[in-house]
Image 1 (cartoon, protein in one colour):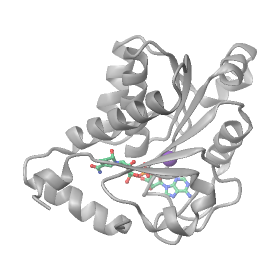
Image 2 (image 1 turned 180 degrees about the horizontal axis):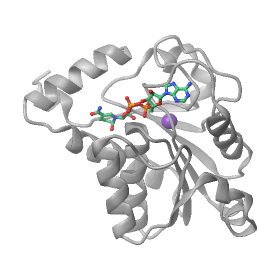
Image 3 (image 1 turned 180 degrees about the vertical axis):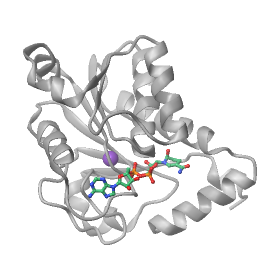
Image 4 (image 1 turned 90 degrees about the vertical axis):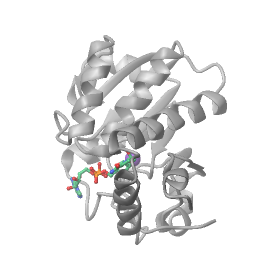
Length: 214
Ligand SMILES: NC(=O)C1=CN([C@@H]2O[C@H](COP(=O)(O)OP(=O)(O)OC[C@H]3O[C@@H](n4cnc5c(N)ncnc54)[C@H](O)[C@@H]3O)[C@@H](O)[C@H]2O)[C@@H](O)CC1
Ligand SMILES: [K+]
């Protein structure tokens, strides 16, 4: 399996953007691929809880949530560190809201109705941190990882399980344990170095190969 580091991936995304494949389109492709993978892996899934951080990994989560809702699933989004801050994540959070998807603070999961939704969700999507993560999990990230790990549903990590460092594969204490990880364009070193934490790993095409004629 070919592999790229987080820095190499960033460079490829810059080159693809310069070649006409926008960052927004890459995010759309990533989230759509993740939703499609979830739907064909877990046939019959009826509900999904999607955890989003404030960066572009969260952006992938908003996109995936839209596609899962369009496929008929009951979907709720949980913001782990407040509102998104990157341009494309803000845009996709807005689209999810316009569709009428519930976008809630993750600490609402302390309330019985939200806790019940998470307990009954067939799918849990982890869009808290991707290649941007380094170091240890702060309290919000740690609490979200614990909720995902404790929930009975299947956990799909977007790009990599939150709490793993993409290049070193170092797992922060309390990191997400995924059943399935969908990574984009190519595997990152963590998928090999922390394979058990990632579960089954699938690589999704997000258009970079075509844009760059690789
Ligand atoms: N740039 C792009 O065009 C694309 C990016 N994609 C997604 O974007 C991800 C990378 O997004 P970002 O670079 O925005 O970063 P992430 O969304 O991975 O992380 C969010 C933020 O967390 C912060 N952070 C780092 N360590 C932390 C810690 N220990 N505790 C709390 N916060 C911490 C970082 O400063 C980072 O800005 C990829 O993994 C992938 O999922 C995909 O949408 C494909 C296209
Ligand atoms: K993630």
